[in-house]
Image (cartoon, rainbow over all chains, first blue to last red; front, side, top):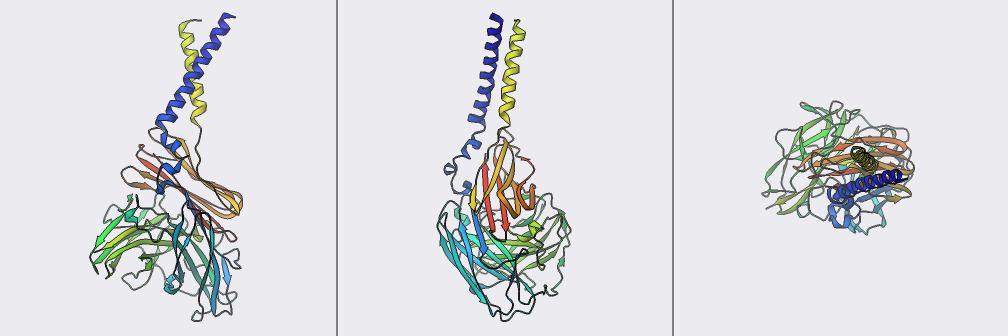
Amino acid sequence: MKKVLEFLGLVMLGLVLGVGIVYVKAEFFDKPAVEVEAPAQQGADTVDAGYTLALVADVSDQFVVDVAGQQEFRAPVKVHNFSGHDATFTLLVYLDYRQLSTATQQFTVKNGEELLLPVAFSLQDLQASAHDLVLSLIADSNQLTSERKEATDFFGTSARYTLVTKSGVDFPAVATPAPSESTWDAKGFRGVFMDQSVQDFETFHVPPKQIVAKRGEMLEFTIRAGGDPEVEQYLVWSTIGWNQVRWEDGEPYWYAQVPRGQFAVRKLRVRAPEQAGDYEVASFITEAPFQIPDPTQVTRLNVNTSFRFTLHVE
Amino acid sequence: MKNITKIATVVAVATLAVATSAGAAQTVSKEKNGVTLTGSIVVVNGGAQPSAYATSTTSQAVGNIVASLHTYYGDGRINFGANDANSNSTYVQTETKTLDSTAGHFGGYHQFTDKNGGFVATTTNVYF
């Protein structure tokens, strides 16, 4: 009896020791995992965030909207803000990856609420074919990254649809994508990355929150794009102050041919605005751009963003 | 009972207790949009070299789910190398990544795409 009690005592001592070790580890060494349960202590950048963007229209399984016979596209867009805070948004509208500046809208949505936003633009000049429609929701568009704790590549969401102006038609033949002279193994990178690196493109660092330039100064950015192991064609565009900028060849985007599983690098040279002030800068990317997306090809439906940062023009 | 046996018993029980507790995972973030959409980072080891993976889960199958885990090291480097995606599914999980020290954080990015629900993006972050 005595030995049994002694053994049970030792087992209890072992349990106390083991649980004690786990408790001390969790309490003093794994502290951040505990803090996750209380994100309010962490500041805005650590709070979990989310956004929804949806076209309220008759959308097919392939995200196609039939607008045959219509002179104007007119449909509400649903925006749901569950970022944890009330926010100001800007909705950017691109038709065939060219921004429709007149369709840009800024608005506010309280946390947890939805908003139906009317979107309208003319279809009169479009040829009878398929056309890409990208709706890009920029969260906290009125805020400057330079005033945040750190740069972020999560600031909203985008939606890609195909408008068909004549039933049964596909995309017209478009310019062929530019071949990439230098490419690197993606090693897991997928999407678009924008900074001012001049070397060591295989390494990615969080870009500075702000860059400074003189009015009208020529700026040079480095754009890294690609990475999908199953895709070879990408389309990249950039914005300054949420306005699409042109590349040196005059095009508003970079239509790139990149070997599967690799990323390409291209310099974006663009003049700083002539007006002093602060402008947010970011890049966007979509895959297999001039095709009606196969809904089973998951990543081809989405538009990804680079980190955004602030351009301070003196 | 000999002393060595006593010590061995205590150590064995303590080890068993630690082992059964160490697998506990921490999950963050859940949101709703018609169906329940949950984006999470699961911390599998929070020690000196924290490890985690990201999951995206829905209560009903949706068109597409994407989960990505970005690993941000203390010196500013980023490793984007954990992605996974699925169509007409309810769950996707990335591979596990490890920080080389506690100076850094994990960022989980979750995209839910459905012709009815639209384009839903969520993020979760775990800082060390």
